[in-house]
Length: 250
Image (cartoon, one colour):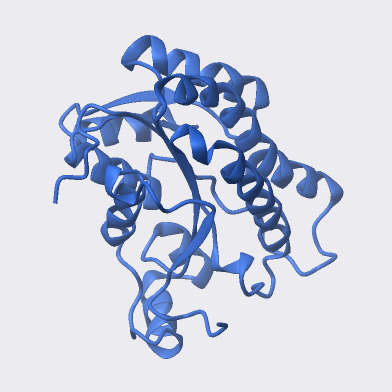
């Protein structure tokens, strides 16, 4: 299936490992010109090498709002205007409803909501000029069914969806789609760290996920590549789960 994104410029945040790395690989495989961003130059360089130079690295922290404002311009100077934005931010600290400090709340809001808003503000004019754009937000199942001990994620990812749902209705006529993925449990280093080991995460996955396994990062990358494609032009303003059937709600 030709996804129609050969030559498109994509900016993938949090792309130095895990799901972001898988997304960058999937888009590069479809011929997109991929800008990858994260805080670690060393890990970014490793991804560029793994992708045989089919990606360009930019060091950036999603919580640094000034950096988020200038990043799209740097990408445009190197590759062209950003046509595909994949907003991916690492999960905030765990904690029950009142565990986290106000400083942690503010940091989570900056990285999960304000950083996204600043990026969109910088990228949207170029998408509108071209009459084409794709914004894909890496969200969480916690926005559908709040997860115990993930208060900061539960609250701030919902705020991001509220912003993006509003945006989707405003830009649909400009040929721009805006979607969020409700992410389930995937075999990533972060999930392994949360459960103490990958073996423990896999065991819990077999016990709790109807598919009886964790998701694989490349499966996630394939979904994002589709949502970023010409084929998905009529899908917008949605939250799409990819979780092996983990969500029980209708």
